Image 1 (cartoon, rainbow, N blue to C red):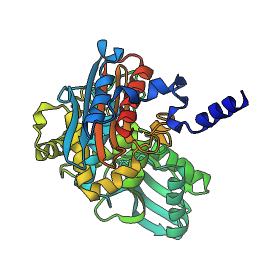
Image 2 (cartoon, rainbow, N blue to C red):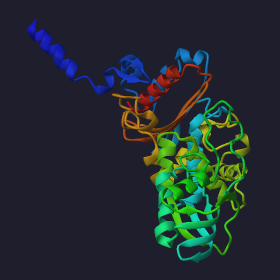
Image 3 (tube, one colour):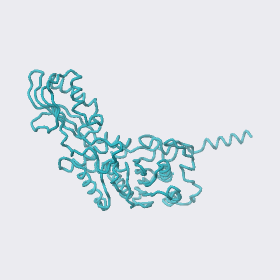
Image 4 (cartoon, one colour):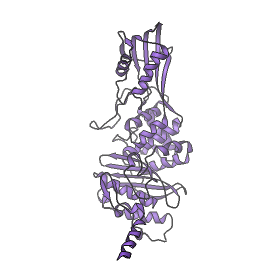
Amino acid sequence: MKKTVLLILSLFLQMPLWAQIYEEDEALYSEEDTTVVADSVPADLSWPMNVQARLDRLMKSTLLETTQLGLMVWDLTDDLPIYQHNHQQLMRPASTMKLVTAITALQQLQGNYKLYTSLYMKGRHEGRTFTGNIYVKGGMDPAFDISDLRDFVYQLQHGVGVDTLRGCIVADVSMKDTLKWGEGWCWDDKNPILSPLLIGKKANFVERFANELARNGVVLDNVMQSTGYVPSDAYNVATCERSIDEVLLRMLKESDNLYAEALYYQLAASYGSQPARAIHARTLEKQLVNHLGLYADDYRFADGSGLSLYNYVSPELEVALLRHAWLEPAIYAHLLPALPIAGEDGTLKKRMLKTPAQGNVRAKTGTLTGIISLAGYCTAANGHQLCFCIINQGALHATEARRFQDRVCVALCQ
């Protein structure tokens, strides 16, 4: 009896971690839920037939009886598709739309791109009194916060030497159009404010600036607040810079919609027409899609974050973009570190725990009512690099769709 207990204990301790129970979104998954039963796949199947057999078994899921699935897996190492299911089906991507934005932006803007918010002055000094206007030119930096604003106040007080201000604080928001929302956004969603001049994600920059000046002892003598343009002869006092990597990190890891829209309008601004409009960003996205050998007019691009119900893409398109990014080191080097890692961080922190996919899958999640999506990269057990896109549409129970997608990822990594 003692020997039997020791044998059972020994076998349990040798169980692979991915065969143990894990939790995601407060739903428990067992070994049967998260892994493909290895005994059901003939041991003598070689690559890629083994992974194809696992995925074929998953296609029998009851989830697919009442919902739509679009799935495509591409072997980057061999440079060929290894699995396709409705891969050309047009579907709403939800937040995997952020991959379209990120890859197009990195293609167009490049990895050394920066976002700027700048402070200017025009007027005359009399001792420590400045009579004239202060201008703040917005560059749609989604991360500009109170610490950055205080740096501006410090430069006025100690860099320029101002303790009394007479004139106006002018907001230059000419970078983009005046639309405060995206095309196809739902009125009852948690939508970001699309303004070029934000502080803490709110569009009350000038008011906060005036309050911070007063709080730090700067006398505001009949100072007015307005909007306008920075004159060509105004001089620069301070500039806040934000790298594209800082924006990508929060945009993709945490699926921040404002950060995605901010990058979308950086892309739009690079088109060369002012003010920047969403149609300019769409034009550049379409140019890239056509360059990849697909037909851009087959798809619909509406915004940068995936909030819009007017976005329509296909798994084939998202895989083509992921493949393009992988083939371009200058893009991939910035994209990969910003993607959530299964079981470790971002929106995948609680998913695929204790499975072969943990620490392996790096992918962007997406969630809208009825839409659950996942697209990114992983490494197969034979060392092949893969990219994939999974879109479940009509899935009103998000946990069930995420469970299915996790099983797909385990099948790829197993």
